Length: 494
Ligand code: NAP
Image (cartoon, rainbow, N blue to C red; front, side, top):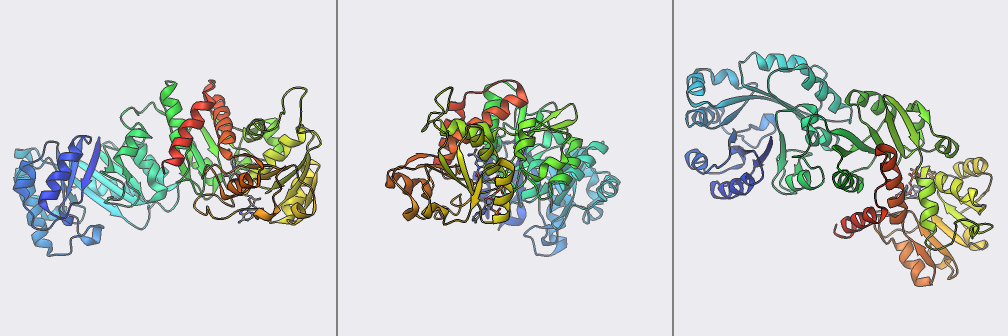
């Protein structure tokens, strides 16, 4: 079930929002602690979906700072009036006891809740057992995630319990427990009516749950895929892969995993049997140590952007390499006998995961590569591995460059006014390839175009690498143009 909390500041607005929310939600939560001049009768008379009455005190993360007896009296009234659900905090339930006669008469379901806004403690099962002993109909345990692995504690709890349990993590790290609530086994999930009107940290807008995450179509059998990175919140991966899964008829879902420690993450999430991952900044190289097998090309490159879970064995691939060469193919012929990359002077900015993939790809086509990187030692190591030159940044000024490639995040959203190369270093006969796809046209590309250079943005490379990883996961090749179109629409409509 999906529940939308109503956090209006008066009864009229609450009825308006409740009517709106009832069109899409299964349950509506009336947060009385946000409301002035309560009129419980009127609110309940105007419901057209089941409601949860919540009157959250400040100590449990709510807005109510008044007298505790008054608050408890309102909760008791909600039970007497036959609210469908009443949320009662774990430290309040003992004060409601004698209302139980009303509970059985009116069929009000009691939710006994525990919120922890600081952390996700290890003793969740003890908390659950304590709350169950109150004789409640439903238990609610909501905690704050300080790390992505905190979601696994919630998942484990949900696997171990029998009573209906609402449980998920708050905060950015907890997002996946809200999206994957059916796979986790939570009784319901919360979503905000609109972006910007959340009642708790990390709550997702209902429109996004429907459009990107196809929440109604998910079930316990839905296979989980996702993106490992940090940051991940602006990634277009979920929009792309979920649209492809839908279009091509897969019961799969793709979610963003914001990961600090990739090894810890991979180990902990084996419990959820995630079927495949994309890997992005900054984990493409470090993830290798956590995998069971590395495909030869990825091993040679030393960077993995795709992981396939093959019956519990995690295999790493690299689809960036081929994707970058295909993207360059739109401005320079690289196919068959017409390899125009041969002997071309390519200056490659960056020595991270993307740069490694591009450098090895260019090497295959006999380009004459020079690597420039902020950390010169890293440039030296990549140059050694590939068998090419490396240099200081002013190399671009002093030497002729045919193709200039940016494989650093300089100029990427939100720092869109930055550029890795000052315009004065550009020459009209250069080909300029910026691997950044957000924004679609970076300042670097704009200035290169203005100089008369041929340019390639990061979007085609993104589409090729995404298509290749989709094929590794599903065995089916999706249409690359479709990926580019969805990505473009998403990025320019932001
Ligand atoms: P990464 O492994 O973290 O490497 C980042 C690289 O950028 C390193 O060489 C780093 O230099 C350099 N760098 C970072 N911040 C810098 C700064 N402020 N000034 C100068 N250099 C800086 O990341 P990655 O996975 O290779 O990704 C790099 C870029 O490629 C990103 O913009 C990403 O969007 C893009 N990319 C695009 C696609 C696509 O499909 N279009 C695919 C993959 C990557 P140090 O070594 O000195 O730290």
